[in-house]
Amino acid sequence: MIKTTRLYQFAILFFLAVIVIISCNGFLPKNDKNVSDSFISDAGAVTVPVPLPTKATFATELVPMNLFYVREGLDRELTLNTYWHSNTLLLFKRANRFFPTIERILKQNMVPEDFKYIVLIESGLLNVTSPAGAGGYWQFLPETAKEYGLEVSTTVDERLHIEKATQAACRYFLESYKKYGSWTVVAAAFNGGQGRMKRIIKHQATQDFYEMYTNSETGRYIYRILAVKLIFENPESYGFRLKQEDLYPVIPFKSVTVNSDIKSLVSFAKSNGTTYRLLREMNPWLVDTLLTVKPSKSYEIRIASGAFNDYDRLIREQVNNGRK
Image (tube, rainbow, N blue to C red; front, top):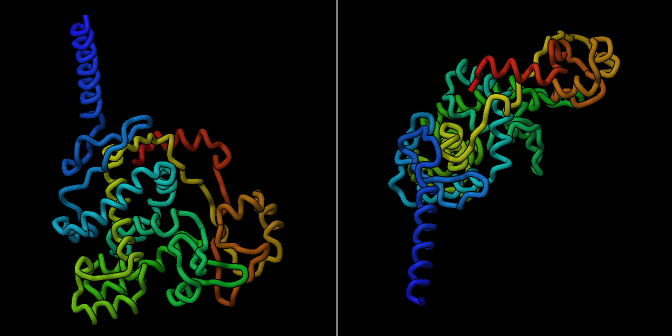
């Protein structure tokens, strides 16, 4: 009887083990042949290491995956961003609204499209301000913003203007590329500063980022960009399954040209058939209740139009357009 019971228990354990093994393999659809096929990220599933690609690039520049500190640096950021589900899901949602604009401006300026992932690392596509005073989508410091053509005044902060701030970022990237000849170093300089990168290149006698010894923040910065790029390019391979209806839609608008002072944006909003709240949502670069217009300058103020107040309709149109 004891032997029979033990055999029965062993059979049950063996059967359960087989079920676990089967359920942990071949579960997710694959987008990239370089990504492991055994990763599971569904809610309630076991937690396993994220798959590292056999090959990775940034702006067509090869990432030396054969170096242990490169693999482990990327592994760290890929693990953090994969398992930080709430944040990464929100990045996907916001990117659907803003990436078309960013991609267009990068292309116009002949900056590699991979630079769009920097804005996710910098601000998460939110108009936030750092303790050091860096602000807006691309997190420019006020003086740097002015240097690259952005207005930062008491009533206007163009760091919060998606098009103008992205144009300024492109000017920075192109200027840096002329100095370094490497897009990866350009990205690192956006975090560490051009002066610091110049000193590193001089003292360490290399212009290859992966040969440089940098501070932890700049080192992690590049791997965070790479991690987000990998997840965005292969979402299902890292456990993210989103439908078109899950993503934030673009809000339709019309533009009103303004070339003189506005004493009250509240009154301006009402006279243009909108609300002050909605005006600020559509134009976060307006940072006061009034607008002071400098001589010979004009502004394009966005007014929500069309079905802006019918969210279900916006989602239906988005699904029909099928942007992925």
